View 1 (spheres, rainbow, N blue to C red):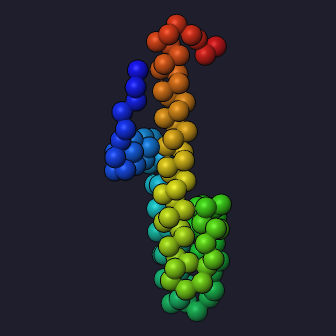
View 2 (view 1 turned 60 degrees about the vertical axis):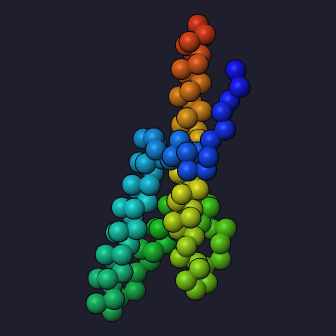
View 3 (view 1 turned 120 degrees about the vertical axis):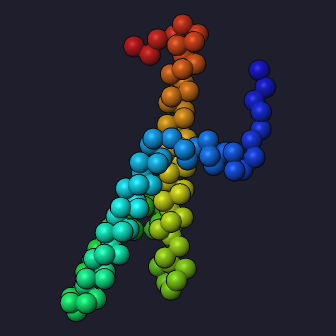
Amino acid sequence: MAKTSRSLPQTLRHYLVNPLALGYLGVVLAVCLWVAVDAFHASSSGDASFAGVWAVLVTAPTSLLVPFTGPVGLMAIPVGAVVQAFALGALYRYVTERRVHGTENGVSGA
């Protein structure tokens, strides 16, 4: 059976809209919101904070590929999050579709 080709938006939706990828993006969003709140409070108190490191670490290793210099460096966090969510979504689809196809053919995973 021939596979149908998908457009780029369909491929992104196929791999990004699943529980694993959306959960990861939710965690990244929560960490980035926490960093923003902490940065606001640290700026008002005059105390330095290393909370911004968590936003980089939660999207590592993809976010570490871009040098953090200037505003372009801030793009590494959302780009890293989307790339890793795509990879997690591909892994999720591979595992779930493999399980479904295995049980259709009478092959058990146990």
